[in-house]
Amino acid sequence: MKEKIAVIFDMDGVIVHTNPYHSRAFREFFSKRNLSPTEEDFAQHMYGKSNSYILSHFLQRVVEGEELLQMEEEKEGLFRELYAPYVEPIGGIVAFMQDLKANGAVLGVATSAPRANLDLILSKVPIEEMLGSILASEDVKKHKPDPEVYLTSARNLGVEPHQCVVFEDSFSGVSAALNAGMRVVGVLSSHSREELPPCNLYINDYSDLSFEKIAALF
View 1 (spheres, rainbow, N blue to C red):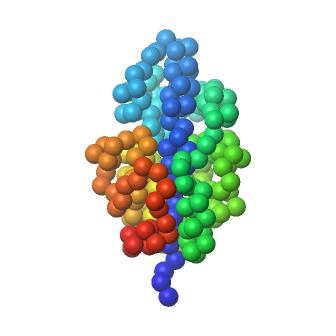
View 2: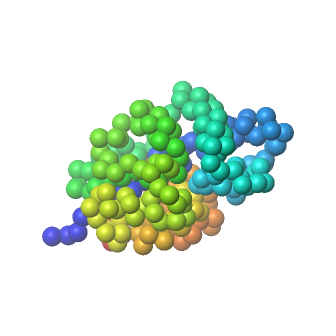
View 3: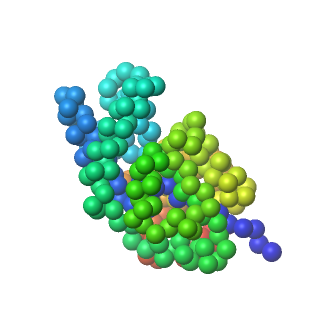
């Protein structure tokens, strides 16, 4: 019998196109502090990064502890308010997940975003019942590119890293999956393939994907 396959999805830019709304929320947040980062700044220092990194980078000082929690809640609250009316999955992902599940794959989500953001997405995109592991930023000590979130996902799903394929859209996310010893599909929603570490496969959306195509990566 063939080994079980686990498929683990990042959230932002992989399940949903949230990055434009994160940019808007951060713009609003930083403009209150007389800062105006460019889209290029965001591409380098926001997408796929943890809030502690983003805030520390743009405010040019270490943001941690209680202050980090307060700032994170302010910015993520803005994001959820802006994005809630527009939540929509990336093309074909729900049918693709159903196909994976029907063929015996186990599925997980592993995001650097806070749990409240994940809850918003899961309340609007009908995938939660298919997931055997759900991890948000509160569930790990070390953020991507550290492999902790993916190694923990594999344990939750009852598989070894070599049985996993990860869908990621950011440099730090792809790096985290590679550091975990997993195969990676690069989702080209916020970066070009040249801007990502080498992946096993690249996609723009899920319309042409199937369980067979994923199984062929092993």
